[in-house]
Image 1 (cartoon, one colour):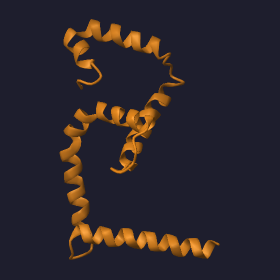
Image 2 (spheres, rainbow, N blue to C red; image 1 turned 135 degrees about the horizontal axis):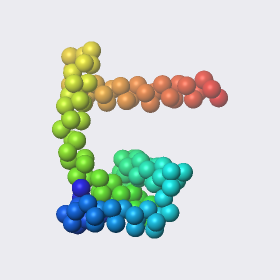
Image 3 (cartoon, rainbow, N blue to C red; image 1 turned 120 degrees about the vertical axis):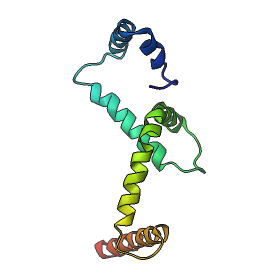
Image 4 (cartoon, rainbow, N blue to C red; image 1 turned 90 degrees about the vertical axis):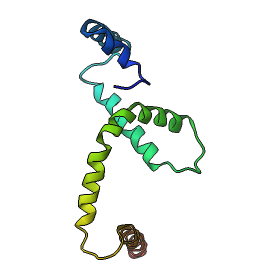
Length: 124
């Protein structure tokens, strides 16, 4: 549940209000089994747009919409964050190194970029 989308209002009003609002939304969005994935795709790509944006990028309409969509899911992210932090800690602990994780991953990222350059040179 979140405050941004207004779902809490209907949830607090009970099942009848929830069903009525769900029917209104389905009708207004012309939702069907054939197109519901398009709406899910919008949510997924919006998350990726925000994830790949960076502070110095100028906002544009798509980025602004994507940020709004991502913010709709903030309560979910807050609930799940600790699970992701625990999972990351577990994965990081399995690295076969005795140096700082940040330093190690930075070095690995650097290697990825160097290999791309070598690969690009070989393929041209």
